[in-house]
Length: 379
Image 1 (cartoon, rainbow, N blue to C red):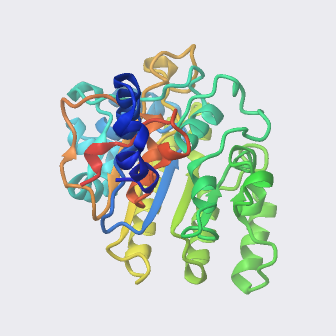
Image 2 (tube, helix red, strand yellow):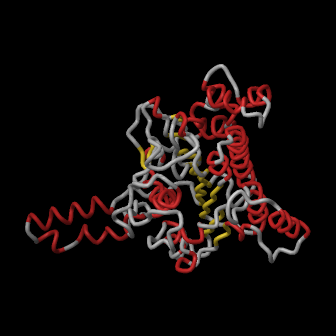
Image 3 (cartoon, helix red, strand yellow):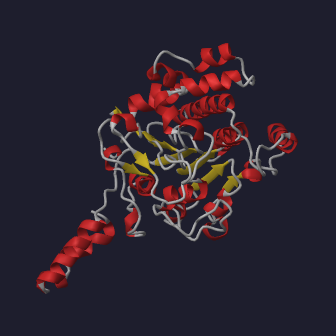
């Protein structure tokens, strides 16, 4: 039972008050008793691949889009077919995402295959990035956040809240390729260490590797604004974990979304495949470190989906289906049920409370309106 609910058991008001008062307090007790796990998980990593479609996650490369990409002349048709083609969806998705399907889906759980009765969706009405990151991190859909240029997030995220608890203070960190994460996680108010956009590269690092990464960032052509590449983020994070051991970590990759907006399905496939490799690499690195081995849970998801058919390049309310995402969970407290079929719908707004629940904390005690934890993944 949550610590802040125990007093209700002995409340004189409950014992001697009216039936209405008793019912109200009992309802309150049930609400506060939101599942919080006291399991093996001591560290949680939320990993987001911006704009990755559930269609590719569960079906691999779309055969029609694959042929369209082959005809574009950017990448030769035989090369694309060799890398990502296949006779059926199961073969294609294994080629595109070997870690998701070879490790996460075997040892954890994966939601979002609508073709198999497993839907995962956002609840915000915008269906693009800032609203999605806010929803997954704060547990609520805020209709006031209606653009990616929105200012500092007024909503306290689960990361900020955890960092304010004595047991997690100074052990929560944010990494991402998109500079907007400074606003999304409200660095000025939250005091969270945020390495995002231009600050992915630590300019204070004067080691040979640090100077090389800085030079690569400064001399590389940016796909958008000050975004770092996924590869730069991966190197910076890999180095950081050698000397820092955060217990709660957010990691946001963005290349996949940018290439889709540019209509480059071939480059999208390459970066989606590389994203899978980066997640695998991070999992192996953390499992090799005593601070993380056997006590770390990964949550892998997307901030939004995309349209289908000819609308695969874009997302938002004008591209139906952009509210559909996927959610994968891998860790010592999650039963290995694999790809979920015929299960109730799961929501992006549930991710924040799930992060907290894995760590034995009840996010609803701070934010009653947040989505409830994903109980299926809490063993």
